[in-house]
Image 1: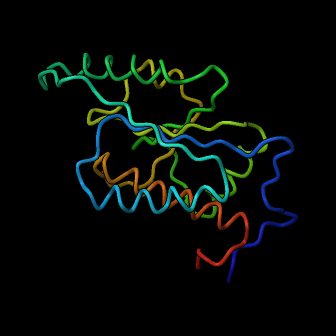
Image 2: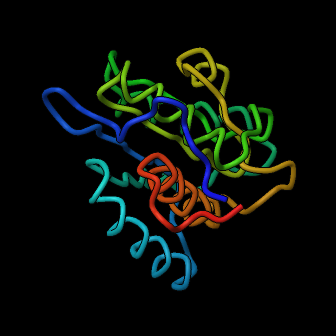
Length: 173
């Protein structure tokens, strides 16, 4: 049975379509991830202004310099974020939502904010400065995934959320 939002309507944007940006720290090295991501990014253009931003990281510091690595990543990330952007970190310690709950959450946020940025951290997570700037944290699973795979998993879940909101036949329960 398809989920039904009591009194719900498709997302309406009085002046502009919601802008969603996915920010990723570091490259993807798997072609299959890029191919899958591109497919969902293309589909998302029917529901929002979707953009993906890859922040290339400078040469790696030694692994015993984790705090410096996180600080460098934070400086690059925070330089890309505007003051009015609503920032959601994709973080292992974030709130876990099912697909329908995520769709409801996204619909509420879309009414309140014109630009939502979802952020995938680097291999060591986020610095405290990034946590301090974030508006929310969401966990995609209790399992740990490569940050490279997260962009594909998240793009599919974002697409699924919009199809749930629009009551389109993609999500099955």
